[in-house]
Amino acid sequence: MDFLIDSFLSAMLLIGSLDPGLLEIIGVSLKVSCTSTLIASVIGVPGGFIIAFSEFPMKRLLITILNTLLALPTVVVGLFVYAFISRRGIFGVFDLLYTPKAMIIGQVILIIPIVATFTISAVSRIDDRYRKTALTVGANLFQTAWMLVREARFGIAAAIIAAFGRVIAEVGISMMLGGNVRGFTRTMTTAMALEYDKGQFVLSVALGIALLGVSFAVNLFFNYFQGKVRV
Image (cartoon, helix red, strand yellow):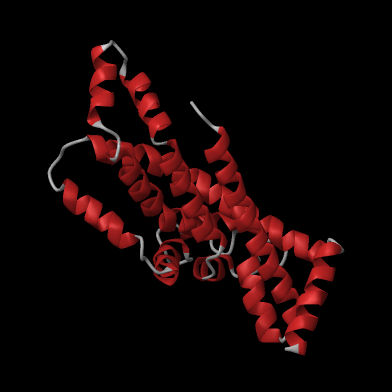
């Protein structure tokens, strides 16, 4: 117990000193995770809308596949992307392996199903009379879609936050595609794994506290958004 307490106190001192190495790792994590979440949202939210309001063959099968992909292991995504971007892969010529771009590609693949599935769920709860009424009074397709976004905004925001939480805490893709290169692709989770193997528990605990702090800040913003936004 004394060891745990000492590690925690040392970790708090490290965070309070704004250690450059610690801030560098946090910065890489936020940059990669935020970029991945933004790209996945741009693809997943419209995709969820289209799936929810369109009727086409095997729609239920597509939704089932998306639901299944929610449990997709990060190492499977890492292996899949690695096969394409390694030197012997189709996209090996672009030299993407062990770069932040490779990590972003893997993370986007990981969380697109999350954003799309949660968006479908949020939009499907909206009474279809809203859409029909908007079209009846002369609203165009864009105006109708915007009205539906406003109605489902909390569900969509939850989808984006869930996706961010998935990538900020994942380690498989970051390790396999990023290589854990210091100052370049080392994230909070990969650094925690490395420091644990080295027996450097103080930095691991500090990174764990920082990770929880980031997650708490994101959810705090979401709660503020829920309480203040009334469109």
